[in-house]
Image 1 (tube, one colour):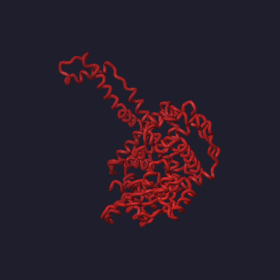
Image 2 (cartoon, rainbow, N blue to C red):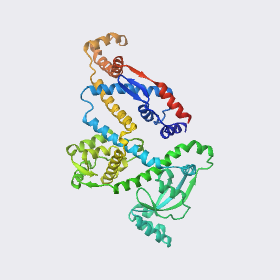
Image 3 (tube, one colour):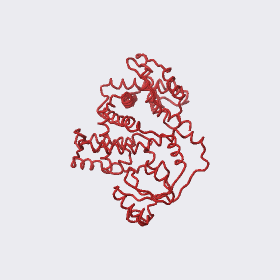
Image 4 (cartoon, helix red, strand yellow):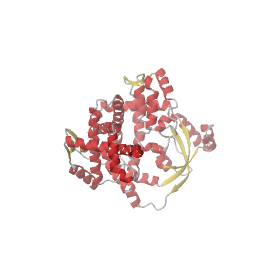
Length: 465
C-alpha cells in the first residue's frame, strides 16, 4: 500500500520545477525534468522502491546511456531512418498524453464524497444483466416497452437473438466496478436491486441494466479508505477521463475533414490480415507498447512494399501506410485484434489529437522534449551496445595467455585440448566487459559532474507533501 501511495504521489503531485542541471557530460546536460521522466519509469515497476541509492543509480545509468548514445551518433550509421521513425511515433504518443493531461484531465474534479463512494464500490460486486443497443433511439424504444410491462428476459431474447446472452436473459454474471467504464459502472452500482435502469451510454453503445444480486466486503473502516484514497482517486479520474476523452474526440471528429482512400485501405488491410493472431490478455495493459518486438517486425515487413502509399487525409495531411503502421504500435492490443475498421478509427482519432496538440503549442513542452530524448537515447544506447559487443574479437595469443593464467584450474589438460573452451570463455568475458570498459574510457575523455543535492531536495520535498 505504501508503494502505491508513493507512486501515486510521484504521478499526481505537480509543482513548479525549474530545469535545474543535475549532471553534465562534456557539453551535454541532464536536467531535473530529464531525471523525473526517467525515474518515474523506474519507480512504477513492481517491487521497486524510492531511495537515495536508487536515485543515484538511475542518474549514473542515464549518464552512461547519454555517453553511448552520443558515440552511436558518431558512427554515421545512427540514428537510421528506422530509429527516426520510432522516435517520431513515440513523440506523437507523448503529445497525446500531454493533450489528455492539459485538456481532459485538468478539467476533472473529484470531491471527497465521490472518491469515498468509488472506494466503497471497489469493495463490492454486482450480478448484472443488460440489454445492448447501438443507438439511443433503439434503447429508448425498448425502455418504453419495459416500463409498460414487457419482460426483461424475453426482451433479451429479441435483442441478442443468436448470441448466448439471449438464453441467459442478458446476464453478464458477477462484475467489479473497476471492470466497467465510468457511466456503466456508476449506473450499475447505484442501481436498486431488481429494478431496471433508464438507458445509459458507454464507450460501446447504450445499455439498459438490471442488477439481480450484490456482495459487499464486511467491516470497511475509515482507515482502510484513507490508505487507499489516492489509489482510488487515480482510478476514478482515469474512468471519468476515458469517458470525457471519448466525447471530446467525437466532437473533434465532427469539426474535422477526414478523407479515406478505400482502395489503398483495402490493400493495407490485406497486407495486415492475419498478422495479429494471439488473444488479448490482461498483461497487455501493463505496457505502453502492447505489441511484441516480433509483432511489430511482422507489421513493418508486411507493409514494406506499400509504405509510402497514401491511405487517408486528415485536415489535409496525408497519412501513409507507414504512418498507419507506426500509429498501430501505440494502440491497445484489444483494438488491433478487434478488427481493421476499429483500428482505422483509432488511428484517425490519434492523428486528430496530434494535430490539435501542435495547434495548442504542446509540441514545445519540456516534457515532450525530455521524454523523446530519453526514448531516442535508449534506442541509440541499445544499438551502440550491440555494436560494441559484436566488435569483440579474440586472438590466439590472448587465448594462450588466458590458458597460462587459468591452467591451474585444468590439471593435466594441454592447450590444444582446452583452447576452444577457453576461447568461448574468454570471448564471453570480453563481451560482458566491452560496454563498461568503453564507457569508463570515455569518461576519462569527457568531464562528468553530478548534482545529487538537486534531485534529493526535490524528492524529499515531494514526499513531505
